[in-house]
Image (cartoon, rainbow, N blue to C red; front, side, top):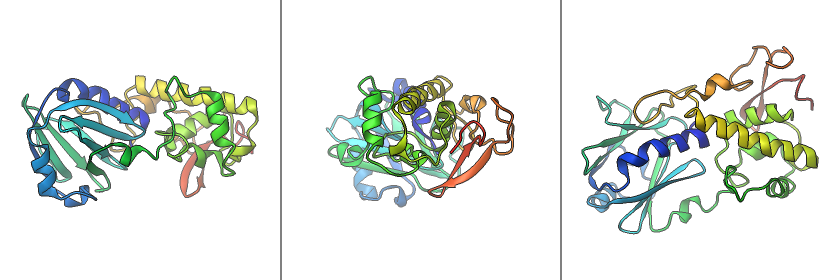
Length: 269
């Protein structure tokens, strides 16, 4: 699933192509993509509207258009946004054409992605917790939020209402870097552990953004290139391989039904 680094990369790489451009045509190929909108109405309403700005909030992309509305996209598990693909594949769910001749295709193998056209983006993203890379997000903020939850720390990190944008891969990497077992209770971490985790979360995410995200499954960047963050993974998706610190085999367990990778020697329960 595209997480914060992947969605941030998509946003950064789309910016120069779409901001300041107008929709010349919007075509929804799969009505399931729009849970709250009529296909014909959205297509009509977007046509002629200019994208004034584009931002990321958590794992969501928010296109602010000249009508004052916001086009909000969530790629979910396998969604991708492709610029001028040579072919429209069988998994395309929507296409958007722009005044500069660019065509943007929303492709989604498992058909889980969603698009909303709303008066106020907060109607969709307002439930999200703070951005972990924001300058205003502090170790005290993280401590205060974790102290309210007696759930496994892995579950807390991927709860979008607690912190926005972190998913399975980067939660596993941050917990390994902080040497914290994924089943430790969120409210039981010491002050030192929370501070360590705070810095590890930010370091792991910042590094992954610099590496243009992780291509471990279906994620590709808008122009088709792969991300390289997966080359830095130390535990995520490495079950059975040797821990880079102690050499013990990396294990995988389920935490709230989500696969979690960790080193049983470096991350003691």
